[in-house]
Image 1 (cartoon, one colour):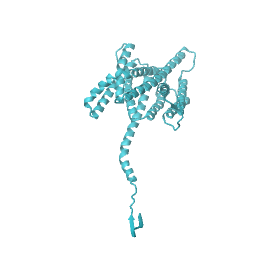
Image 2 (image 1 turned 45 degrees about the horizontal axis):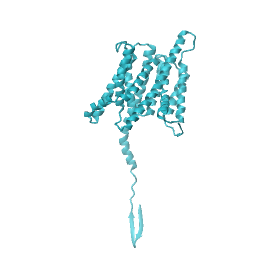
Image 3 (image 1 turned 180 degrees about the vertical axis):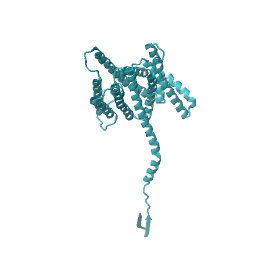
Length: 361
């Protein structure tokens, strides 16, 4: 662009050169660099979620097949004990690797000893997790896999209730609507899958066992909500102390260290048998899959968010329902499909943020 004018009787000609912004070039550079890491990280997150979905489905179906169909007599506490040993070993390796990766070789042992010396806050959550796991084995011996998976989604409801009562959290109206949808879906699937009405003593006993299985599954979700709130309070209390925050692997190691002796005590108190008495292939696979679940949840919390984690959970509901129908003679009807859809949609509606700001306190 050119500008012409006069100054003190002289003609002045000024040439101003205007350069176009280099945004296209910047975009080219960004396209050549950032997406490579972003794509790899995205695929890693997708892999974690798919693996967690498969793990959740396998764990539910294997417990149903082992306890409800084959009626195997191995101790569930022994399976969970071996699972905790696996998780403790993996968490120990991850802590050691992280310390070496950050060149803290001389502090790795001190850090682990510090974790062991500060186990008191996680004693109660460890005991709650133990009761939850044992209840899940009992529940799946009396109710179908799909019913159990849908009831497990009630943990969102119980967590919300305890968060309101203990932490004083407020919830949006759409979240309350979603929680009601989850409850209605669970009530529907529970009613559909109960044994047929009959006056015979056999079916009367079956209805009673089905009710006990449902009660065990619901109790597990209540304990799940309670443990979630307790762990959140522990996390916030450690933050207020201005101490170094603990990683997922630190907490997993602490929980496993607390759980292992408790599972030993429960196993030998209940059965008074050797640890691997009446173990089968199913028991071995269950121990491995259970340990993998704890590891995958840790990875999921570290690399994803609540929305994606619930996506894996609802994907597990869908897979469990279909595979239970195909291989374990589970129920399948239009009513079952409606119940599954109702719960899945409600979970997503609860998790995905809305624009509404109307809160209910």
